[in-house]
Length: 282
Image (cartoon, rainbow, N blue to C red):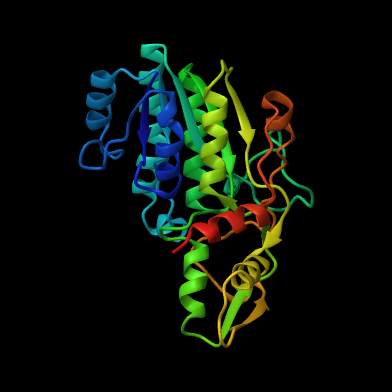
């Protein structure tokens, strides 16, 4: 199997590069080899490599920056997936694409299911939703996997930000009225590898670690797994007391029942995944 992996240097992409290796030849070009902001660059690589499946882990993920760069966010999060899907359709290949919990507005009290109506609050969510819709419209065989609060042992993410701040501050103020499920890149990569080992049909699925917490709860869990002397205090605050350019949903917990019903797959509890990631950090 020839697998074209975009975003191979990112958190999810790096984990996928390792997890997908047993399936066949994995081509993971760097940005100077395939630029998602350049359709010509995408076409050149896809038509040369002729993948059996495209795994699109590349994205414009800077949620706040997207508010001031909506054009770039749309190019990478919507236009590029459309081109990849159209090329996959032409080749008879499949496409695996990652989307986000931020396609929802957070007004629902219960976890979101795939049939809930999207209503994104920010540019990032809107461009990711547009990417979903354009992939579906392409007619390619697709898997769209919505995940949430992604992090890994390395890279720019909430976990590493909390650890860096804890090393220099006596107090960390963390939002405690936004709920979600922290999901490790490694857990995501293992699920994709498992799915691609067998035939699959097109579909959209929620795919996050089980359970839920707040950013404040996540920060406390991170710090409880690393010794600090003294340990900084984690102070809960409301989202309104930490204004950001992009609005975020108060609830972005995803219901993963469909993933289990179709594939028999469950991601681990977010606490267990955190244990694994913390164990992998230097």
